[in-house]
View 1 (cartoon, rainbow, N blue to C red):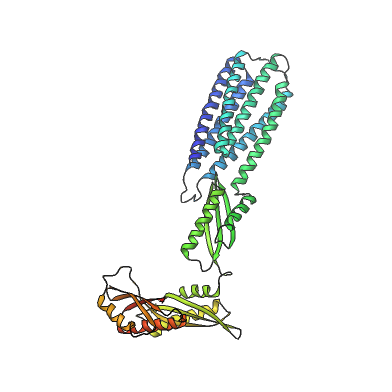
View 2: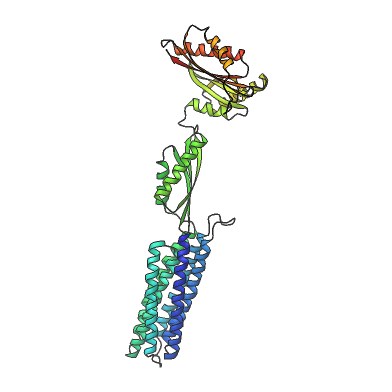
Length: 452
């Protein structure tokens, strides 16, 4: 936005400068009866009009995106550059035509004097001022409109030099010198204008450098977490480069993690291409995801599933089987819960044909609140008596029971023989949890086994 504002200010200064040159050349040309100076003044007036068009284009480009221009108005600046380039080409053709025509015409009867030279020198000073101003501005902030006006300034300088040269040469009787110079200038300006028109026309057709697209692809591919990069759509609007990038992530990547990776891709592109505005689209890729990860994602996507854990795989006689624990609302009946498990099995068979059968263990889901009331010491004593009945428990640690409405959250620390197998420990803790749950209703139990 700041760049657009700076361009309009530079173009305003350029417009005032060239319009002052038109007034000086017109007045001094009329006083000295210099047709060349008057013609150059008309040319300066035409350039003033073109600079005004470029200024309006730059001003319109400042406008922020709206409902009809979601990418902003940067293309208007390219359009202004195109109009300016066409104007330069037409003026260059006029120079060529006039040069050829005057070479075939008789010498003029009216000879210009000192006033004509003074007027021309003023315009030369203005042209040098504009060239320096525009050149520095293009280097600093760029822009198609500034480039178009820069070419105009060179054309003004050339035409004014031709006019003064013609005045001097005519004075010494060399009537053809200024016309040959004008012809060379016209050809040069025509070539410059074609180059400008070609470049701005490409901008308007959304042409983009294949090397730039390749660079964006390499940056995206090198970002950690990105498996592959799909279609990349890019376009330029003013100085801003818009890029839509599609990346592939592991199918079991969480939404938060996917968003984090997308942000990293966007930041990496911004670091290498500062004027880029990037939109990242991410898609799941299951090619590198283990089967248990796919099963976990499938089960979680089924309506009514409140949680999935303990997903395991095993093979027997060349066939692959899966086991998983699925938690559903504790209030629903067995029929409803079974329908959920059937849907999970069907989806697994459809999406992972290599799984011969999936065994689903249904469990009740209890929402554990984040905040509880004070400890229930009476309940803790009841739990301690249950634990004391198990000789495999070598030490009873902390027993914490917290209440929230009708839910009791119980955390138990207890130590077992360090040489006891983990399978045996798991069976014991599961049995203890079941006994406590039967005696204490609406309880959520977590046992933390430790080696003794």
